[in-house]
Length: 160
Length: 303
Ligand SMILES: Cc1cc2nc3c(=O)[nH]c(=O)nc-3n(C[C@H](O)[C@H](O)[C@H](O)COP(=O)(O)OP(=O)(O)OC[C@H]3O[C@@H](n4cnc5c(N)ncnc54)[C@H](O)[C@@H]3O)c2cc1C
Ligand code: FES
Ligand code: FES
Image (tube, rainbow over all chains, first blue to last red; front, side, top):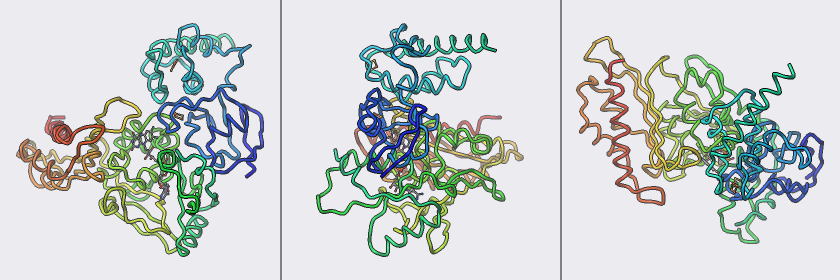
Protein backbone atom coordinates (compact mmCIF):
# COMPACT_ATOMS: atom_id res chain seq x y z
CA UNK A 1 0.00 0.00 0.00
CA UNK A 2 1.28 3.46 -0.88
CA UNK A 3 1.15 5.82 2.07
CA UNK A 4 1.98 9.51 1.99
CA UNK A 5 2.99 11.09 5.28
CA UNK A 6 5.16 13.93 6.51
CA UNK A 7 8.32 12.83 8.30
CA UNK A 8 10.39 15.46 10.07
CA UNK A 9 8.79 18.13 7.92
CA UNK A 10 9.35 16.44 4.52
CA UNK A 11 6.57 14.74 2.56
CA UNK A 12 7.47 11.08 2.04
CA UNK A 13 5.75 8.34 0.08
CA UNK A 14 6.35 4.77 1.21
CA UNK A 15 5.14 1.44 -0.15
CA UNK A 16 4.54 -0.75 2.89
CA UNK A 17 2.18 -3.33 4.35
CA UNK A 18 -0.73 -1.35 5.86
CA UNK A 19 -0.52 -3.10 9.24
CA UNK A 20 3.29 -2.88 9.39
CA UNK A 21 4.40 -1.12 12.56
CA UNK A 22 5.23 2.56 12.17
CA UNK A 23 8.45 1.70 14.03
CA UNK A 24 9.57 -0.63 11.22
CA UNK A 25 8.60 1.85 8.53
CA UNK A 26 10.69 4.51 10.23
CA UNK A 27 13.73 2.32 10.82
CA UNK A 28 13.71 0.00 7.84
CA UNK A 29 11.82 1.71 5.02
CA UNK A 30 12.96 5.26 5.80
CA UNK A 31 16.34 4.31 7.32
CA UNK A 32 15.84 6.59 10.32
CA UNK A 33 17.48 4.39 12.95
CA UNK A 34 17.49 6.96 15.76
CA UNK A 35 14.15 5.56 16.91
CA UNK A 36 14.83 2.42 18.97
CA UNK A 37 12.91 -0.73 19.74
CA UNK A 38 13.06 -1.78 23.38
CA UNK A 39 10.08 -3.94 24.25
CA UNK A 40 7.76 -3.81 21.25
CA UNK A 41 4.83 -3.71 23.67
CA UNK A 42 4.25 -0.09 24.60
CA UNK A 43 6.04 -0.35 27.94
CA UNK A 44 9.45 1.27 27.49
CA UNK A 45 8.98 4.32 25.27
CA UNK A 46 12.26 3.84 23.35
CA UNK A 47 10.23 3.96 20.12
CA UNK A 48 8.43 7.23 20.97
CA UNK A 49 7.75 9.59 18.06
CA UNK A 50 5.36 12.50 17.66
CA UNK A 51 2.22 11.80 15.64
CA UNK A 52 0.59 15.13 14.80
CA UNK A 53 2.57 16.60 17.69
CA UNK A 54 1.62 14.04 20.37
CA UNK A 55 3.99 11.35 21.70
CA UNK A 56 3.00 7.80 20.70
CA UNK A 57 4.72 4.44 20.83
CA UNK A 58 5.59 3.74 17.19
CA UNK A 59 5.65 -0.01 17.95
CA UNK A 60 1.86 0.15 18.47
CA UNK A 61 0.81 2.26 15.48
CA UNK A 62 -0.06 0.70 12.12
CA UNK A 63 1.54 2.33 9.07
CA UNK A 64 -1.79 2.98 7.38
CA UNK A 65 -2.99 4.88 10.44
CA UNK A 66 -0.36 7.51 9.66
CA UNK A 67 -1.49 8.31 6.11
CA UNK A 68 -1.72 12.06 5.68
CA UNK A 69 -0.30 12.75 9.11
CA UNK A 70 2.88 14.22 10.48
CA UNK A 71 5.54 12.14 12.21
CA UNK A 72 8.54 13.62 14.02
CA UNK A 73 11.40 11.34 15.07
CA UNK A 74 14.47 12.17 17.13
CA UNK A 75 16.24 13.09 13.87
CA UNK A 76 13.70 15.90 13.49
CA UNK A 77 14.69 17.56 16.78
CA UNK A 78 18.22 18.58 15.88
CA UNK A 79 21.30 17.23 14.13
CA UNK A 80 24.66 16.08 15.43
CA UNK A 81 26.13 19.36 14.17
CA UNK A 82 23.35 21.49 15.57
CA UNK A 83 21.97 20.03 18.76
CA UNK A 84 18.79 21.58 20.20
CA UNK A 85 18.95 23.16 23.66
CA UNK A 86 17.16 20.07 24.96
CA UNK A 87 19.73 17.71 23.45
CA UNK A 88 22.66 19.79 24.75
CA UNK A 89 21.25 20.01 28.27
CA UNK A 90 20.41 16.32 28.43
CA UNK A 91 24.02 15.50 27.50
CA UNK A 92 25.62 18.04 29.80
CA UNK A 93 23.50 16.97 32.79
CA UNK A 94 24.42 13.32 32.32
CA UNK A 95 20.86 12.46 31.28
CA UNK A 96 22.09 10.29 28.40
CA UNK A 97 24.30 7.38 29.39
CA UNK A 98 23.99 4.12 27.42
CA UNK A 99 21.62 6.02 25.12
CA UNK A 100 19.01 3.39 24.28
CA UNK A 101 16.22 5.38 25.94
CA UNK A 102 17.53 8.75 24.82
CA UNK A 103 15.69 9.18 21.48
CA UNK A 104 12.36 8.43 23.14
CA UNK A 105 13.13 10.63 26.14
CA UNK A 106 14.05 13.51 23.82
CA UNK A 107 10.84 13.17 21.82
CA UNK A 108 8.60 13.02 24.92
CA UNK A 109 10.46 15.94 26.48
CA UNK A 110 10.26 17.96 23.27
CA UNK A 111 6.47 17.54 23.31
CA UNK A 112 6.38 18.82 26.88
CA UNK A 113 8.65 21.80 26.12
CA UNK A 114 6.62 22.73 23.04
CA UNK A 115 3.87 23.84 25.43
CA UNK A 116 6.21 26.61 26.67
CA UNK A 117 7.09 27.71 30.20
CA UNK A 118 9.28 25.87 32.68
CA UNK A 119 7.66 22.64 33.88
CA UNK A 120 7.99 21.49 37.49
CA UNK A 121 9.90 18.33 38.38
CA UNK A 122 6.57 16.56 38.79
CA UNK A 123 5.38 17.69 35.37
CA UNK A 124 8.59 16.47 33.74
CA UNK A 125 8.27 13.13 35.52
CA UNK A 126 4.66 12.72 34.38
CA UNK A 127 5.51 13.61 30.78
CA UNK A 128 8.35 11.06 30.85
CA UNK A 129 6.54 8.35 32.81
CA UNK A 130 6.26 6.25 29.65
CA UNK A 131 10.01 6.35 28.99
CA UNK A 132 11.98 3.78 30.95
CA UNK A 133 15.66 4.45 31.65
CA UNK A 134 17.86 1.81 33.28
CA UNK A 135 20.96 3.99 33.64
CA UNK A 136 20.42 7.51 34.88
CA UNK A 137 18.01 7.14 37.79
CA UNK A 138 15.90 9.82 36.04
CA UNK A 139 16.96 12.84 38.15
CA UNK A 140 19.64 13.82 35.63
CA UNK A 141 17.09 13.59 32.84
CA UNK A 142 14.65 15.77 34.79
CA UNK A 143 17.40 18.31 35.49
CA UNK A 144 18.41 18.40 31.82
CA UNK A 145 14.85 18.89 30.61
CA UNK A 146 14.21 21.71 33.07
CA UNK A 147 17.49 23.42 32.18
CA UNK A 148 16.47 23.29 28.52
CA UNK A 149 13.07 24.78 29.40
CA UNK A 150 14.81 27.66 31.21
CA UNK A 151 17.03 28.30 28.18
CA UNK A 152 14.07 28.14 25.77
CA UNK A 153 12.06 30.53 27.93
CA UNK A 154 14.98 32.98 28.05
CA UNK A 155 15.41 32.72 24.28
CA UNK A 156 11.67 33.35 23.78
CA UNK A 157 11.88 36.44 26.00
CA UNK A 158 14.90 37.67 24.09
CA UNK A 159 13.11 37.18 20.78
CA UNK A 160 9.98 39.09 21.78
CA UNK B 1 6.75 -13.19 18.50
CA UNK B 2 4.66 -13.07 15.36
CA UNK B 3 5.24 -9.64 13.95
CA UNK B 4 5.54 -10.81 10.38
CA UNK B 5 2.00 -12.08 10.65
CA UNK B 6 1.07 -8.60 11.84
CA UNK B 7 2.18 -7.01 8.57
CA UNK B 8 0.44 -9.77 6.57
CA UNK B 9 -3.06 -8.82 7.75
CA UNK B 10 -5.48 -7.61 5.10
CA UNK B 11 -6.58 -4.05 5.81
CA UNK B 12 -9.51 -1.74 5.25
CA UNK B 13 -10.19 1.85 6.25
CA UNK B 14 -13.95 2.44 6.27
CA UNK B 15 -14.68 6.14 5.78
CA UNK B 16 -17.83 6.35 7.89
CA UNK B 17 -19.64 4.55 10.67
CA UNK B 18 -22.19 3.30 8.12
CA UNK B 19 -19.40 1.89 5.95
CA UNK B 20 -17.80 0.22 8.98
CA UNK B 21 -21.13 -1.37 9.97
CA UNK B 22 -21.75 -2.57 6.40
CA UNK B 23 -18.29 -4.13 6.27
CA UNK B 24 -18.83 -5.89 9.61
CA UNK B 25 -22.26 -7.16 8.48
CA UNK B 26 -20.95 -8.57 5.18
CA UNK B 27 -18.05 -10.31 6.81
CA UNK B 28 -20.06 -11.62 9.76
CA UNK B 29 -22.61 -13.10 7.31
CA UNK B 30 -19.76 -14.99 5.61
CA UNK B 31 -18.35 -16.08 8.97
CA UNK B 32 -15.19 -14.01 8.44
CA UNK B 33 -13.39 -12.31 11.31
CA UNK B 34 -12.77 -8.58 11.50
CA UNK B 35 -10.60 -6.76 13.99
CA UNK B 36 -11.51 -3.13 14.57
CA UNK B 37 -8.25 -1.29 15.07
CA UNK B 38 -8.47 1.82 17.25
CA UNK B 39 -5.37 2.77 19.25
CA UNK B 40 -3.77 -0.66 18.87
CA UNK B 41 -2.52 -0.57 22.47
CA UNK B 42 -4.27 -3.83 23.30
CA UNK B 43 -4.55 -5.59 19.96
CA UNK B 44 -1.03 -5.01 18.63
CA UNK B 45 0.46 -6.02 21.98
CA UNK B 46 -1.61 -9.23 21.84
CA UNK B 47 -0.21 -9.98 18.37
CA UNK B 48 3.28 -9.46 19.70
CA UNK B 49 2.68 -12.02 22.43
CA UNK B 50 0.62 -14.46 20.35
CA UNK B 51 2.12 -17.65 18.96
CA UNK B 52 2.72 -17.54 15.18
CA UNK B 53 -0.53 -18.44 13.41
CA UNK B 54 -0.74 -21.66 11.38
CA UNK B 55 0.38 -20.93 7.80
CA UNK B 56 -3.03 -21.83 6.35
CA UNK B 57 -5.19 -20.06 8.96
CA UNK B 58 -6.88 -17.01 7.44
CA UNK B 59 -5.86 -13.79 9.18
CA UNK B 60 -8.69 -11.46 10.17
CA UNK B 61 -9.28 -8.25 8.27
CA UNK B 62 -7.99 -5.25 10.20
CA UNK B 63 -10.40 -2.32 9.84
CA UNK B 64 -9.06 1.02 11.05
CA UNK B 65 -11.72 2.85 13.04
CA UNK B 66 -9.29 5.28 14.69
CA UNK B 67 -10.29 8.13 12.42
CA UNK B 68 -14.06 7.72 12.21
CA UNK B 69 -15.51 11.13 13.08
CA UNK B 70 -18.77 9.54 14.31
CA UNK B 71 -16.87 7.73 17.06
CA UNK B 72 -15.25 10.88 18.43
CA UNK B 73 -16.22 13.79 20.58
CA UNK B 74 -17.91 14.63 23.86
CA UNK B 75 -21.30 16.37 23.90
CA UNK B 76 -24.23 17.05 26.20
CA UNK B 77 -27.39 15.21 25.30
CA UNK B 78 -30.30 16.05 27.59
CA UNK B 79 -29.28 15.19 31.15
CA UNK B 80 -26.48 12.97 29.91
CA UNK B 81 -23.05 13.34 28.41
CA UNK B 82 -22.39 11.28 25.29
CA UNK B 83 -18.81 10.30 24.59
CA UNK B 84 -17.79 8.83 21.25
CA UNK B 85 -16.30 5.41 21.94
CA UNK B 86 -13.22 6.24 19.85
CA UNK B 87 -12.29 9.12 22.16
CA UNK B 88 -8.77 8.65 23.52
CA UNK B 89 -7.80 8.89 27.18
CA UNK B 90 -5.70 11.97 26.39
CA UNK B 91 -8.72 13.65 24.79
CA UNK B 92 -10.82 12.70 27.83
CA UNK B 93 -8.44 14.14 30.40
CA UNK B 94 -8.19 17.38 28.41
CA UNK B 95 -11.88 17.74 27.57
CA UNK B 96 -13.52 20.66 29.43
CA UNK B 97 -16.89 18.89 29.78
CA UNK B 98 -15.25 15.72 31.13
CA UNK B 99 -12.96 17.51 33.57
CA UNK B 100 -15.81 19.70 34.87
CA UNK B 101 -18.70 17.22 34.98
CA UNK B 102 -17.03 13.78 35.06
CA UNK B 103 -13.90 14.36 37.15
CA UNK B 104 -13.80 10.65 38.02
CA UNK B 105 -13.42 9.72 34.37
CA UNK B 106 -10.77 12.40 33.87
CA UNK B 107 -8.84 11.08 36.87
CA UNK B 108 -8.97 7.51 35.60
CA UNK B 109 -7.88 8.61 32.10
CA UNK B 110 -4.86 10.40 33.62
CA UNK B 111 -3.80 7.11 35.25
CA UNK B 112 -3.96 4.89 32.15
CA UNK B 113 -0.45 3.82 31.10
CA UNK B 114 1.54 6.94 30.31
CA UNK B 115 1.00 9.73 27.79
CA UNK B 116 1.95 7.58 24.78
CA UNK B 117 -0.74 5.04 25.71
CA UNK B 118 -3.29 7.74 26.58
CA UNK B 119 -2.70 9.39 23.20
CA UNK B 120 -3.78 6.22 21.35
CA UNK B 121 -5.86 4.12 23.75
CA UNK B 122 -9.63 4.54 23.46
CA UNK B 123 -12.68 3.83 25.59
CA UNK B 124 -13.95 1.43 22.89
CA UNK B 125 -10.75 -0.61 22.99
CA UNK B 126 -10.75 -0.64 26.80
CA UNK B 127 -14.40 -1.77 26.86
CA UNK B 128 -14.07 -4.32 24.05
CA UNK B 129 -10.92 -5.97 25.39
CA UNK B 130 -12.62 -6.01 28.78
CA UNK B 131 -9.53 -6.81 30.81
CA UNK B 132 -10.29 -7.38 34.49
CA UNK B 133 -7.87 -4.49 35.10
CA UNK B 134 -9.51 -2.02 32.71
CA UNK B 135 -9.47 1.42 34.34
CA UNK B 136 -11.94 2.93 31.87
CA UNK B 137 -14.41 0.12 32.55
CA UNK B 138 -14.13 0.67 36.32
CA UNK B 139 -14.80 4.41 35.97
CA UNK B 140 -17.64 3.97 33.47
CA UNK B 141 -19.13 1.28 35.72
CA UNK B 142 -19.15 3.61 38.73
CA UNK B 143 -20.95 6.15 36.55
CA UNK B 144 -23.48 3.54 35.37
CA UNK B 145 -22.66 4.21 31.73
CA UNK B 146 -24.90 2.95 28.96
CA UNK B 147 -23.11 1.61 25.87
CA UNK B 148 -24.43 2.36 22.42
CA UNK B 149 -23.82 -0.61 20.12
CA UNK B 150 -24.21 0.06 16.40
CA UNK B 151 -24.77 -2.25 13.44
CA UNK B 152 -26.63 -2.20 10.10
CA UNK B 153 -29.62 -3.33 12.12
CA UNK B 154 -29.62 -0.10 14.12
CA UNK B 155 -28.46 0.91 17.57
CA UNK B 156 -29.07 -0.86 20.85
CA UNK B 157 -28.31 0.47 24.28
CA UNK B 158 -26.77 -1.83 26.88
CA UNK B 159 -26.08 -0.81 30.50
CA UNK B 160 -22.45 -1.52 31.32
CA UNK B 161 -23.52 -3.92 34.11
CA UNK B 162 -25.15 -6.12 31.43
CA UNK B 163 -22.26 -5.93 28.93
CA UNK B 164 -19.81 -8.50 30.32
CA UNK B 165 -20.60 -12.20 30.44
CA UNK B 166 -17.24 -13.52 31.65
CA UNK B 167 -13.47 -13.15 31.42
CA UNK B 168 -12.95 -10.96 28.34
CA UNK B 169 -16.38 -11.93 27.06
CA UNK B 170 -19.26 -9.60 26.32
CA UNK B 171 -22.60 -9.36 24.51
CA UNK B 172 -21.20 -7.59 21.42
CA UNK B 173 -22.32 -9.49 18.29
CA UNK B 174 -19.91 -10.11 15.39
CA UNK B 175 -21.57 -7.42 13.26
CA UNK B 176 -21.65 -4.79 16.01
CA UNK B 177 -19.28 -2.12 17.20
CA UNK B 178 -19.27 0.16 20.22
CA UNK B 179 -20.26 3.60 18.98
CA UNK B 180 -20.56 5.65 22.17
CA UNK B 181 -21.10 5.65 25.90
CA UNK B 182 -23.65 7.78 27.69
CA UNK B 183 -23.27 8.88 31.28
CA UNK B 184 -25.53 10.94 33.53
CA UNK B 185 -23.07 13.13 35.42
CA UNK B 186 -23.40 13.33 39.20
CA UNK B 187 -24.59 16.66 40.63
CA UNK B 188 -21.75 19.22 40.49
CA UNK B 189 -19.38 18.88 43.44
CA UNK B 190 -20.50 15.33 44.29
CA UNK B 191 -17.90 13.24 46.10
CA UNK B 192 -15.95 10.71 44.06
CA UNK B 193 -12.88 8.53 44.47
CA UNK B 194 -10.33 7.15 42.04
CA UNK B 195 -7.72 4.94 43.67
CA UNK B 196 -5.35 2.79 41.67
CA UNK B 197 -3.07 0.59 43.75
CA UNK B 198 -0.08 -0.77 41.84
CA UNK B 199 3.67 -1.15 41.89
CA UNK B 200 4.41 2.11 40.13
CA UNK B 201 2.40 5.24 39.50
CA UNK B 202 2.51 5.13 35.71
CA UNK B 203 2.45 2.31 33.19
CA UNK B 204 1.49 -0.27 35.81
CA UNK B 205 -1.56 -2.50 35.67
CA UNK B 206 -3.35 -2.22 39.00
CA UNK B 207 -3.31 -4.77 41.78
CA UNK B 208 -6.69 -3.28 42.76
CA UNK B 209 -8.43 -0.10 41.56
CA UNK B 210 -11.58 1.56 42.84
CA UNK B 211 -13.78 4.08 41.07
CA UNK B 212 -16.64 5.49 43.10
CA UNK B 213 -19.20 8.29 42.94
CA UNK B 214 -21.97 9.31 45.30
CA UNK B 215 -24.67 11.92 45.71
CA UNK B 216 -25.55 12.80 49.26
CA UNK B 217 -28.72 14.26 50.74
CA UNK B 218 -27.50 16.08 53.89
CA UNK B 219 -30.84 17.76 54.59
CA UNK B 220 -31.52 15.38 57.49
CA UNK B 221 -28.26 16.32 59.25
CA UNK B 222 -26.91 13.24 61.00
CA UNK B 223 -29.39 11.17 59.03
CA UNK B 224 -27.62 12.01 55.75
CA UNK B 225 -28.42 9.46 53.05
CA UNK B 226 -26.94 8.51 49.75
CA UNK B 227 -29.22 9.23 46.81
CA UNK B 228 -26.78 7.86 44.26
CA UNK B 229 -23.93 5.44 44.63
CA UNK B 230 -21.81 3.85 41.94
CA UNK B 231 -18.71 1.71 42.25
CA UNK B 232 -16.39 -0.07 39.85
CA UNK B 233 -13.49 -2.21 41.00
CA UNK B 234 -10.70 -3.59 38.81
CA UNK B 235 -8.36 -6.57 39.18
CA UNK B 236 -10.42 -8.42 41.80
CA UNK B 237 -12.47 -10.80 39.61
CA UNK B 238 -12.59 -12.20 36.03
CA UNK B 239 -14.25 -8.95 34.94
CA UNK B 240 -14.35 -5.48 36.43
CA UNK B 241 -17.07 -5.63 39.11
CA UNK B 242 -19.66 -3.06 40.12
CA UNK B 243 -20.19 -4.18 43.71
CA UNK B 244 -24.02 -4.45 43.79
CA UNK B 245 -24.00 -5.55 47.45
CA UNK B 246 -22.19 -2.37 48.51
CA UNK B 247 -24.57 -0.28 46.45
CA UNK B 248 -27.60 -1.93 48.07
CA UNK B 249 -26.15 -1.43 51.54
CA UNK B 250 -25.17 2.19 50.90
CA UNK B 251 -28.42 3.28 49.33
CA UNK B 252 -30.64 1.54 51.85
CA UNK B 253 -29.97 3.37 55.09
CA UNK B 254 -28.55 6.50 56.75
CA UNK B 255 -24.81 6.77 56.20
CA UNK B 256 -24.05 6.93 59.92
CA UNK B 257 -25.69 3.56 60.48
CA UNK B 258 -23.48 1.68 58.00
CA UNK B 259 -20.71 0.01 59.97
CA UNK B 260 -17.34 -1.14 58.69
CA UNK B 261 -18.11 -4.80 59.22
CA UNK B 262 -21.20 -4.71 57.03
CA UNK B 263 -19.25 -2.74 54.41
CA UNK B 264 -16.43 -5.26 54.42
CA UNK B 265 -18.85 -8.16 54.04
CA UNK B 266 -20.65 -6.44 51.16
CA UNK B 267 -17.34 -5.69 49.45
CA UNK B 268 -16.10 -9.27 49.78
CA UNK B 269 -19.43 -10.55 48.41
CA UNK B 270 -18.73 -8.71 45.15
CA UNK B 271 -15.18 -9.85 44.43
CA UNK B 272 -13.36 -13.11 43.71
CA UNK B 273 -9.67 -12.23 43.53
CA UNK B 274 -6.88 -14.63 42.57
CA UNK B 275 -3.14 -14.96 43.13
CA UNK B 276 -1.24 -13.88 40.00
CA UNK B 277 2.03 -12.24 38.96
CA UNK B 278 0.88 -8.85 40.21
CA UNK B 279 -0.47 -9.71 43.64
CA UNK B 280 -2.17 -12.22 45.87
CA UNK B 281 -5.83 -12.87 46.55
CA UNK B 282 -5.47 -12.08 50.23
CA UNK B 283 -3.71 -8.74 49.61
CA UNK B 284 -6.40 -7.85 47.08
CA UNK B 285 -9.18 -8.65 49.54
CA UNK B 286 -7.48 -6.49 52.17
CA UNK B 287 -7.04 -3.54 49.80
CA UNK B 288 -10.54 -3.84 48.31
CA UNK B 289 -12.12 -3.64 51.76
CA UNK B 290 -9.87 -0.74 52.78
CA UNK B 291 -10.60 1.28 49.63
CA UNK B 292 -14.37 0.97 50.02
CA UNK B 293 -14.15 1.73 53.75
CA UNK B 294 -12.11 4.86 53.09
CA UNK B 295 -14.58 6.06 50.48
CA UNK B 296 -17.38 5.74 53.02
CA UNK B 297 -15.26 7.47 55.67
CA UNK B 298 -14.81 10.38 53.27
CA UNK B 299 -18.58 10.51 52.76
CA UNK B 300 -19.27 10.55 56.50
CA UNK B 301 -16.76 13.32 57.15
CA UNK B 302 -18.58 16.65 57.44
CA UNK B 303 -17.98 18.70 54.30
C1 LIG C 1 2.10 -0.14 28.27
C2 LIG C 1 0.62 -0.24 28.41
C3 LIG C 1 0.00 0.27 29.54
C4 LIG C 1 -1.37 0.16 29.70
N1 LIG C 1 -1.93 0.68 30.83
C5 LIG C 1 -3.27 0.56 31.01
C6 LIG C 1 -3.86 1.07 32.20
O1 LIG C 1 -3.18 1.65 33.06
N2 LIG C 1 -5.20 0.91 32.36
C7 LIG C 1 -5.97 0.30 31.42
O2 LIG C 1 -7.18 0.19 31.61
N3 LIG C 1 -5.43 -0.18 30.27
C8 LIG C 1 -4.11 -0.07 30.06
N4 LIG C 1 -3.55 -0.57 28.91
C9 LIG C 1 -4.40 -1.27 27.95
C10 LIG C 1 -4.92 -0.43 26.76
O3 LIG C 1 -4.13 0.70 26.54
C11 LIG C 1 -6.36 0.03 26.97
O4 LIG C 1 -7.20 -1.08 27.20
C12 LIG C 1 -6.91 0.83 25.77
O5 LIG C 1 -8.10 1.45 26.16
C13 LIG C 1 -7.18 -0.01 24.53
O6 LIG C 1 -7.73 0.83 23.53
P1 LIG C 1 -7.19 0.82 22.02
O7 LIG C 1 -7.97 1.86 21.29
O8 LIG C 1 -5.73 0.94 21.96
O9 LIG C 1 -7.64 -0.66 21.59
P2 LIG C 1 -7.19 -1.57 20.34
O10 LIG C 1 -5.95 -2.29 20.69
O11 LIG C 1 -7.22 -0.77 19.07
O12 LIG C 1 -8.41 -2.57 20.32
C14 LIG C 1 -8.64 -3.46 21.39
C15 LIG C 1 -9.86 -4.31 21.08
O13 LIG C 1 -11.02 -3.50 20.98
C16 LIG C 1 -11.69 -3.72 19.77
N5 LIG C 1 -12.31 -2.46 19.36
C17 LIG C 1 -11.70 -1.27 19.09
N6 LIG C 1 -12.60 -0.33 18.79
C18 LIG C 1 -13.83 -0.92 18.86
C19 LIG C 1 -15.17 -0.47 18.69
N7 LIG C 1 -15.45 0.81 18.35
N8 LIG C 1 -16.18 -1.35 18.85
C20 LIG C 1 -15.92 -2.64 19.20
N9 LIG C 1 -14.67 -3.14 19.39
C21 LIG C 1 -13.64 -2.28 19.23
C22 LIG C 1 -10.61 -4.20 18.84
O14 LIG C 1 -11.14 -4.91 17.77
C23 LIG C 1 -9.75 -5.03 19.75
O15 LIG C 1 -10.29 -6.31 19.88
C24 LIG C 1 -2.17 -0.46 28.71
C25 LIG C 1 -1.56 -0.94 27.55
C26 LIG C 1 -0.18 -0.85 27.39
C27 LIG C 1 0.46 -1.38 26.16
S1 FES D 1 9.51 -0.51 21.83
FE1 FES D 1 7.71 0.64 21.74
S2 FES D 1 7.35 1.06 23.81
FE2 FES D 1 9.03 -0.29 23.94
S1 FES E 1 20.61 6.06 29.33
FE1 FES E 1 20.65 3.90 29.39
S2 FES E 1 18.54 3.42 29.51
FE2 FES E 1 18.54 5.53 29.72
